[in-house]
Image (cartoon, rainbow, N blue to C red; front, side):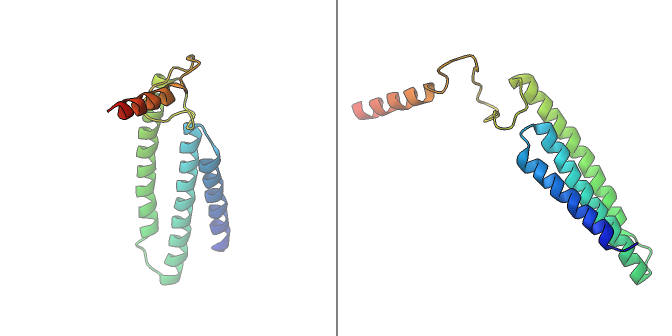
Length: 132
């Protein structure tokens, strides 16, 4: 098998994952896209390891060992990432990335003038500074 086939497949997987990270708004789908990108890297590592081991006649297989470490890191990342997403979803009721602004800030979506409050506070702060 030529090296070009796994390299092209890896590039397509990586580009698909990159598009998913940039275009998606759901945190779980972003995590899945990151996993897709990590799997593309793993495919490249194994393909180049096999290609280099045939050329150099070595038996070390360092690319495959590095792939095992990458898989372990990906498993830890998805475990921690899902725990964070679930905690945020319990607190906020959504996992939409655009609606999550700050973990310490909580806005009531039923409040009709929740966007007007920070402007009022800044006006009050300006009046207080003018009076001082």
